[in-house]
Image 1: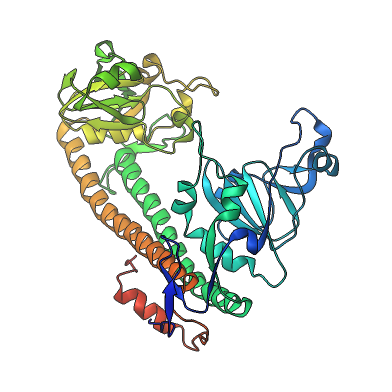
Image 2 (image 1 turned 180 degrees about the vertical axis):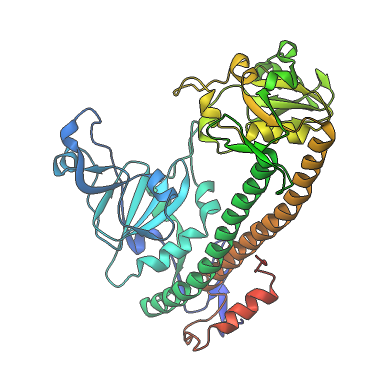
Amino acid sequence: MSFPRYPEYRDSGVEWLAEVPAHWNVLPIKNNFKVVGGSTPASEQSGFWDGDIVWVTPADLSKLDSFQIKSSMRKITPAGLKSCGTLLVPSGSVVLSTRAPIGSLGVAATALCTNQGCKALVPQKGIHGLYFAYILSITTAELNNRGRGSTFLELSGDELSAFKVPSPNPIEQRAITIFLDHETAKIDALIQEQQRLIALLKEKRQAVISHAVTKGLDPTVPMKDSGVEWLGEVPAHWEIGPIKFYVEFLDGRRIPLSSEERGLRQGDYPYYGASGVIDRIDGYIFDEDLVLVSEDGANLLARSSRVAFVARGKYWVNNHAHILRPVDANLVFWAEVIEHQKLDLYVTGSAQPKLTSEALSSMIVATPPSSEERRCIEQHILEKTVETDNMYQGAQESVRLLNERRSALISAAVTGKIDVRNWQPPADESAFDEEGRQAGLEVAS
């Protein structure tokens, strides 16, 4: 897909913008918008909260999956609105986070107000707020460069008001907005397809591994009840017992180092904590391949990342990960056996979850009796996960390319590098799909 350029350009006088169409203006935000700050009602006043007024924070903006702001995590009452310096702004206003982080944004789909971490841009008559939302969506780096602060960056109202952006006439603003709405919607649909594929691949990966370490590889073998409710049946010849019969605990060799100590000992050796490698230092404790298991942390219950992983080579381990030396060299097998356990049966505490060495050692596992059969299962896991991981990486690369294409298209349109004044939606959208295939933006499922 190619688009014409404007017939004539001029220097914008703005470094990040470079040249713009000769008939465009380049104006400070304040020339097109009223910049409105926000505030927070007193948190201890219950009468100020749980009302019907949308009250937007940077956290709300960071969770948007489109430009539209329809609601917020917290809402305030009319009394709460009146009690502080926040003001209602009309639908169509652009809302921008101006601290922690700078640059998240959306467009009000209803009247709303904000906290002090946001600024609302109320458009003047005839101004298309969505056009300027598209501009601001590609200027995050420039806006952050204008932020100030030692604890966290904050973009002041004055800096935002003075920020210069391309300002074509309202007719062109509308034409560019219609074009981008149409084209980004198509790209977003392709991104969503790839994200669904990524989710399915994650599920498939887990299912393949879980089946291998709980049911084995031969679907014809006789089965028996494991006696463990969540585990169900396992191959009849498998052993069932606490994991302490199959591993040696090396927790006594762990040595924690403070962040200050690690800062003085930076080097090449991995330093492991509960979540994996958290630093690199100049020394090591272990010089063998072992299995590490998280001892504490919210992830023990949330399971948003792995809790059991294989550490190889030379490395250091702190006191937040258990260290296991299995009875054989099938470390991936043993790590996956632990990874696919129902950990909440063994973890204590909800505010500060912990998996003690006693609880871990009592964990009931099912395993083939022979190291050879465990090796076959491990090899199967490695082969299957390589296949899935290759597809997963391909889908991630597709998402990256699509996002790059989306940003480039927005940038080209809102800065006048392409002329879309005469653009019309194509009657046949299959041309876009063909371009996607040629660009390598699709991954076979």
